[in-house]
Image 1 (cartoon, rainbow, N blue to C red):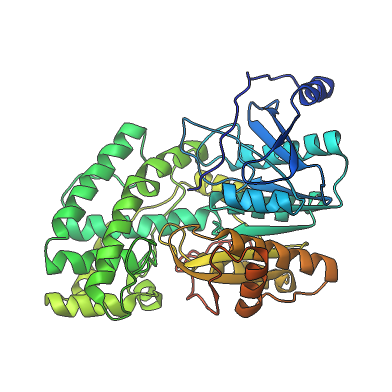
Image 2: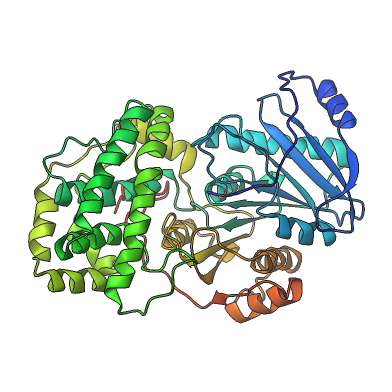
Length: 469
């Protein structure tokens, strides 16, 4: 879900000795100039006792703030350490004096039970080597937004604030429920007689075969008006926007055909990644299927979808009965969850909303993989927990997952720092954030916009454990 900078690999060590770790650290520093900067930077790499790699970049003129970066989902087998989103942002942050640290996670995939302790261990190593930071900020991108929010809720004593970028801030159970809904609709409407398992995937080969089979049905359906309408219905159940990649020309709001074509591309991407192969890995960790659609009213969900108008228009064009297809979804055999798997996923990867330190959460409006409506789920949980004064959310008017400019990232960081320093949220409206971005880096875009996402269709958090949409 995200990219990182290159890292030098070191032989794996598993000693738990703090002394050995410190000796390893002492052997690793290099005083080099990071790419694109004029600042002398100490660059350190090594291994944690868990086997996870870590990396640190600390400028000679360190400003006292350390940024603990949690990277996105990594399917493997490559598993490098990362401490920033991209090289340009890295150069800008180092030039401004920030120390950048982060780790890989001891395992790849849905690795939250490794990620949180590995990140905290990396922070401890940094403190041992460089001393206690004046300010510690946790930040993360995509799946790393989930890791960051877990740190913010469960280890707030280690940080001063948190920044989530395009994060899975709706939590694990909500994520997998909402990932199930579009594939359930596709199988029911496009391949009702096919033996395509949607959950309970025993291995990666089964997951790949299921993804290929359903992708074939989707490709065939895309050649007809009726098939395209049904694909749009499935996309609506995941709130997939009609403009979801920066490479796509931005279609008009009522250009239903162009918008559906863009959703079709996103649906194929979902089938090849999260819906099957990534699900199988998560099910293995959870010990079973952690999602369900028993009791779900799909007509009700469609009525709340951000793209419902497109669906109704395409059904009209195809001469197809939307009521009949929703009835077919209603009658189709439903999928039940394994309670033990739900408990594991909820306990490790869902949230209470009980923030005790400020958090800023930023999302692009055209995200198909982690739809912007996840921000509604976060706000719902935080509000119910009585912590809404600690949360602010901002939106970048761009298509794609995590497609923020360096300027937009620095603007968010500086707004969070302002909140921590002043005790009040100031300058987090779209205009102020764009001004911050222009000041941070006028060479890259600033596209913050006033935006309010529609409700997340299948919310689940630990404040409302009985509510699954």
